[in-house]
Length: 168
Image (spheres, rainbow, N blue to C red):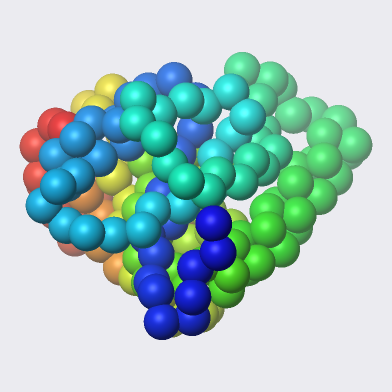
């Protein structure tokens, strides 16, 4: 499906597991209330409970439980980051994205960077499983996102400028 230059889209950025579950819940809340064209940027294993017309898959920046101690590991992360920057740029331009909504993980960082450089609004929703520590993605997205939403009020101490919105 091609989007005309007059149409504007919302880019959803999420990962596998809890991140896609959060995005599914958010879409259940806003679906029907707002007419929007949604496109998604995600990891290959991520699945939503609803259908998104255009989905682009990108490489995860890092494996969650892996120790990155070798130089080649660092080069792989940098390579994935740069590839995700290029893919993000192409998606934002192709679909005339006006808003980027992220539930994480790290793939959200290059997308947010591209979005902000192109003047788009970025919302990041910090994961519901965090109560007393920041996520790796949250540490960056707090400064990149236009709006940073918390699902646990306890995190307000760590992210003082964030907005508590409750759980999805």
